[in-house]
Image (cartoon, rainbow, N blue to C red; front, top):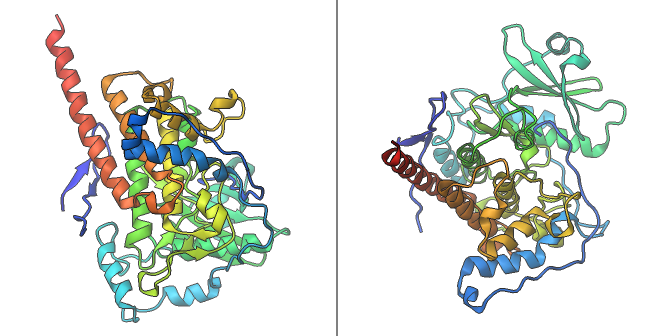
Length: 438
């Protein structure tokens, strides 16, 4: 199988090519509950009316404000919880001869493109005792604490064999119903997925009031931390493009190549972990939901709104209808973060720049996309090219109507093309400079 190897990295792994088409991290998430009524509009020349990207952009900026706060409706559709963890234990250990629908078999056959067969290594098969967890975390020592979220606290740990782990410990005493749903949702989802760009699931433990999820420890912090330069390094445009592709691969896998399609529902920069080689891994499946199966004929899941302000799909907010295109919208916001380095909401900036995606869309429409480039990066011809192309894709992802958004697979294919062209332009630039050097 052909793959494109990351350039300029000691990581020697290759990503698979896509088949030809037939036609927290460790941080808190939030659920908003009020509705924004403001609407935006930009003027543009009549010639731009023929450009589908600019037409979509004008539509997007007219509805984008809704992604920050959901409707003020306390009686939306019920959030159906996942099956019990006990039920999951029984399901996950079903033998290889367990029956599946024809659609599931088809999805399973494609899954091998992205991950090892579940028969070779079933995710989450490690079993832990509470004593092992105490030993690994030094009795949940504050020195081992690496994060805090709505679910609880995350600790770094080391198993007896030297394996580094991240231990997510649910809040005790105030173990609310929604936290129980999130715990079971994360277990249910992680137990079914295995992909290079998803945080690896080791196992879980329920012991009295203790509810614990154990996943791999990813050492290099979150994407958001790196965009904020909290680790002392600046991500260049090439690394940011690689990260976008990694995340696109992970979400494509969830949408298309698992035994049952999964909607992550909380794609954001603080949920993207980075390895030492700046490989991206998507984490935090507490809000994940199964998408409608292709055989069911359903197009969406009716559910209460959950997610993070600034990343929420406005159509999902308005209708309570969750689809895989809600992840696509969040991915569009993430792309604007990668280009600009800014957070989705920048309350300390002047009013016209507080909503990053709106500001970036306006600059793109005005033909000044390069003005959105992270000020920590140099304005070069290759960088200018990437900014233009990524913003163009981002605005397609941010279309107010979900039917106008591309699939995540299509996003990944476009990003691969951008990276290929970027490398060619970078090579030409280098040769041009070399030929003019004394």
